[in-house]
Amino acid sequence: MKILVTGCAGFIGYSFCKKILDSKRYTIFGVDNLNSYYDVKLKKSRLTILKKNNKNFFFTKLDIKNQKKLINFFKKNKFDIVVHLAAQAGVRHSIHNPKTYFDNNVFGFFNILEACKSIKVKNLIYASTSSVYGNVNKFPIKETANTDKPLSFYAATKKTNEVLAYSYSNIYKLRTTGLRFFTVYGPYGRPDMALFKFVKNIILKKEINLYNYGKHTRDFTYIDDVVSFIIGIIEKKNVKKELIPYTVFNIGNGKPIHLKNFLRLIENKLKIKSKIINLPFQIGDVKKTHANVKKINSIIKFKKTEVKSGITNFINWYTDYFNIRKED
Image (cartoon, rainbow, N blue to C red; front, top):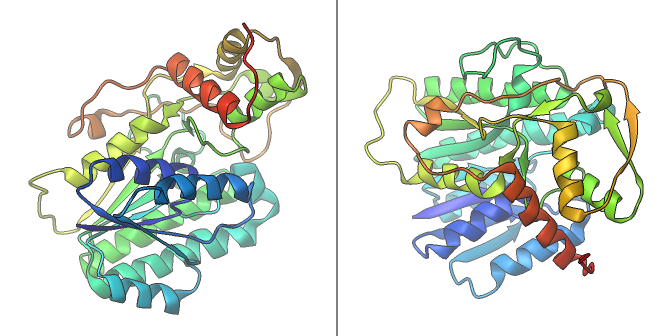
């Protein structure tokens, strides 16, 4: 089976490729434009690992905004499944750079849909986000919750993806599977994410900006669990034939934690006290996320990673990757 992974040098894309390549049952084609949103060295180090001793991995530098090249690439390779993880990520960054998000997340996704339609892929699995829910009042959040009021431009682009996917599933019978990720974290994570920034600043003894005075609640979801969910969807047998082959899943841990408590777990592991600057709530952010995961758990079951263990794994990776001596 041929699987295309867009954004293969990104956090989730790399982690997914690495795990599924271990099975040696799939041929994986990876594309990425290697943009400079964050340290390109980190992206290249991920790619180096994927390329090493992997005869079933083929990388092409390609920008999904180039529709002509993208469709030609699809027609040349005839992929069975597409796992679309390429996107411009980051809620706060989207407030100041909306056009970048439209170009990559909306126009780029449209190109992916057109390319998938052109070769009739069996399933387009794509990244959405828990941010589409905005500020809901009922928890845990079900997939049926209202998604009509995204609070950030990033969330709006991902909501647009889901609407476009539904249209293509309805009109062209293209099977689409949207994954609403809830705060994914773990080794090789993005430098702009909370865990990465917290660990870095604590080690460097720099101040940490804690928005909403640390009262945010997040459903932190460990990267290995996210990857297991994606692989489970790919390998699911007896997929029902539907009039409109469209679905979305919450991909979360189901156990939210206050950001202050999350930070405390990091401090305890590092044995260093953080220097906190408490700041007010920031526009575009949501106060609480808590995934109802009954839908995905009904087809894919495994023991999820506890936050404490996930933090330990990340810190072990971070100190090793950056050659930092661990405290006794």
